[in-house]
Length: 287
Image (cartoon, rainbow, N blue to C red; front, side):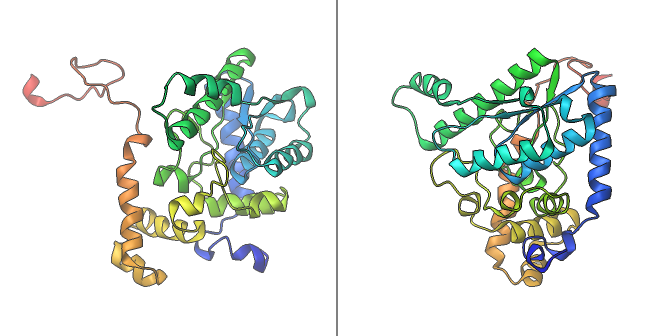
């Protein structure tokens, strides 16, 4: 690994990218072809590192001919993001007929207008994310494919995604890889350098920055999450080891707790013993 890349991939999180990418591609191929009995993958390509790596894994799993990439920009999408997305399409040799650019502005504006004056920036941003997922699932229905999510472990763990938006995919192949590790894969499989070096942003409003919203850079976030949820360290030990404020570690852990509902399916209040896939084990006092 180059010294430059080491700055964005902490040493304790570095992985054997070829083995990990091969495993994820084989797992994705098995899920698509054997488990779901589908043949095609549907991926929303944003120009960021997560979607670029997922697109790469898809072409490796089912081939470029069965990978369908959708660029779904809005009026807040930076031009360079679409340029980077198109560069990934060309690099992966996905057929032109399998790629489509669809602006979501009209659909999002129509839905937002129904809210009247009760709107704020976050509500409108979530509408954009959900419009994208509606379109991706629509294309999946037409083509007989599955929507492959692009969420990584860092953002899923901290709840930095839109419920039923980018969190509403059929599967998440990189969901157990921290952002730093996704960047490492992108660099070592030859994806464009600008894609994995750019500062992450959902681009749901102009000038949005993920690290500014989270109040922490991704390498530090990943190191905290790794120590707390993989190694089971306590907050004080993490703060001491990383040389960061204890309050920052506590804030990150609290954010994980507050967003737990986003990582679970909607709760079904069970009345019968075996309804809706419920656990067959029921309280002993029920007889």
